[in-house]
Image (cartoon, rainbow over all chains, first blue to last red; front, side, top):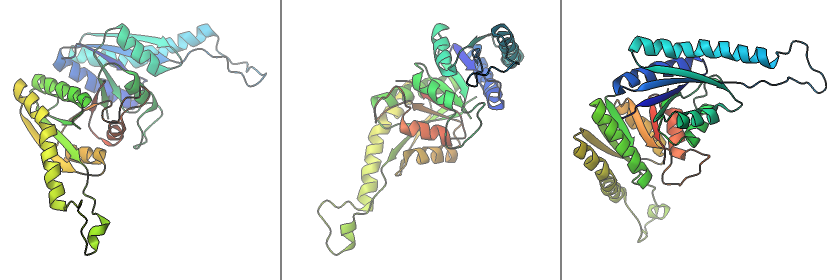
Amino acid sequence: MFKRILVPTDGSAPARRAIKRAVQFAREQKARVIGFYVGPPWQLPIYSDYVPPEVLSPKEHAAAVKRTAARYLAAVKQAARAARVPCSVRYVMAPHPYDEIVKEARRRRCDLIAIASHGRRGISRLLLGSETSKVLAHSGIPVLVCR
Amino acid sequence: MFRNILVPTDGSALSRRAVDCAVQLAKQQKARVTGLWVGPAWEPNLYAYGDSVPPGFVSRKQHAEHVRSAGERHLRAVREAAAAAGVRCTCACVEGAFPYLEIVKVARRERCDLIVMASHSRRGISRLLLGSQTSRVLALADIPVLVCPP
């Protein structure tokens, strides 16, 4: 029923649990898993006129995001390899993760997004994670929200 | 991975898509489907406490009967879809003022391991917001929720 499952991760513990579930589900569905990470774009930290000396250059920032992406996406690759599920990964740098997630799903012609109910900003039982709720509102394909 | 899929419906066209999605998934996973319709809670009419019972008064029994027959009508779509796909199906019909609470409660009671819901239904589509009941179920449920877009 589902052939291509997009699995966005932000490296948090809930995201890792969602990865496990998504991979297990993909194995049953004989689907392909696409790991995805959205890193922050480079930004000059400016406190009014003052620019702190320890600022990362755009290049250094890109390298740092690349390292982070590699670490977070390794979890997807590892889980997929263990379950023998075909897998590819990709990362981008952008200010709005939900936007990139929805776009990437469209670009890669995914038919399901599997995402954790909460990520980095922690759990409040009463609310859904901010990026997850935005993905739900904008996605044109079904979304599996993992607790 | 999923054994018992709960699919709450309000009888709208959009929730119909969630039903189809749930049944298709259940067929593939060899799971069963639990259909659910939540009717409004009975609200006692204040006039009825006096001696005079107004003509529009609906007793608790009558209300339960209305809910049951409306539920039957709404759940028929689930039953038919499941029968067409050869999926085992049970249906529940409960009363409650807050559908999301009933949905989460029934999911627990029936030991469901997935809830399939439409992202919007009755109260219409705003691209920016998720349906009210769906977002509340997402916040409260302790099992995965599959949200189907319109």
